[in-house]
Image (cartoon, rainbow, N blue to C red; front, side, top):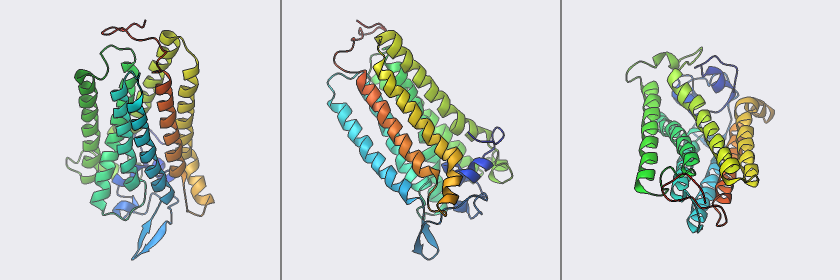
Length: 299
């Protein structure tokens, strides 16, 4: 995911359009030069203001509409283990996409407003992927799905991760404690807390989800077809990350600073979420084995 040393964001911010970069002094959001990266020109709105990453903004809007449709489709399914839990994941993804419009999309916002959206964005990413991981556990029926205790445990733990990540982001930007001040300036923009929470923890959550669901499908349900959907979701997500971290700078220079990899990352992440929903839908059909209430076995 890059060639930087552990905890350093500078090269990531130089080569990619990441929301976390809005927190650092070198970001153009905070009056900096932009990490020496290929900066998008955007659409001039007059008075020195520009609208950047319009493609990403439009795709985020499309992602929100599609996800609302998936929530509606989930509600209409007659047999759906973990329906409410999965809808929580979809709601989290909607929050991520709303924030992305204002953090990756180049709306001419005041600095404090964009930093606020950035903190919510980072927190929502971590919390949403945590909810996805817990959805991988829900299928084992350790607790009855859709119950207040199941939803409450997921929500409370997700809120804790959201608040913790958001606080570190705001403390970094506003120097409340001064602990993260060294990360604000080059040459490294080193922030271990955000690096772990934003770069590494989501990957751990994703890996855990795919492993849990793989075992559920192959060992418990004894099926193979749903694995095609799960594999497609993982592949689409990986492609999006390649566009974001590896190809972005080349797209930017090759299109004369009109678009970069963020647009394609948004697209492939959306497709990945859709495939995760297709996977979830395929293993909650009426003819699958029904879990015994209060236990972890299937009949």
